[in-house]
Length: 295
Image (cartoon, rainbow, N blue to C red; front, top):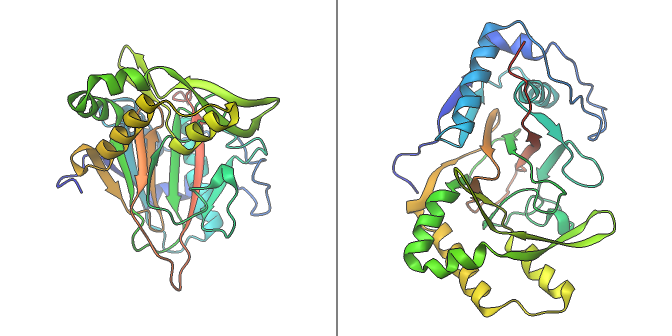
């Protein structure tokens, strides 16, 4: 664990809660029908918070922790509050072909292949969200609805990961920059395999797309073995990712606590947890950037 987490923290003030609940979302609203229109508010507190969070996510930090006092708020209140606030920042997008805009991240028996991680208690598993979608989500947001012990979410910056990986062997960076097959798990009509690079160079560093299982299954679907050079590169990438020195920080997503991050820039995973009398319940939202700062 990093000694001094570098993930900035923001708190939604209690005085702003009524403003964020002004757009009501009925608890019976289907998960694919939540309102994606930008939430408009006259609250200066909400606008200031929005602007600070946008600057942090788009800037050096790459991610933020958001907190709200959950006392007196039911589950639907928390979901509504965070949904409305998220839509002041980004445009929500579906997470699966089935259209869910807000998704329950909870342990489920016999989790579907497309939710092998979010519906399990697996630890580690460092990955990028949405690699099986037609377009990688710009951001991802997780927030907690339950008391939590363990299962902290870890974030790490891809540019720092690449620096460490290059010290191990520059050939690994080159190998991960070549297109490889990803199994998209029937999330794209008529397409089984999407070829894309794990690392895509940009002017500001790298964009990351990584779920090792989907890559291995992509090669299996093509009927070809994973090249030994790629196996070595992914082994090294996984080892570097598990090193606490590259972690930007970790966040315990207890009730009322959220974590928002740049999904193309930050790799994430989680620490182990074991459910006892209380189930671990989170909600997840994906978003794309558009011009929502005005108003």
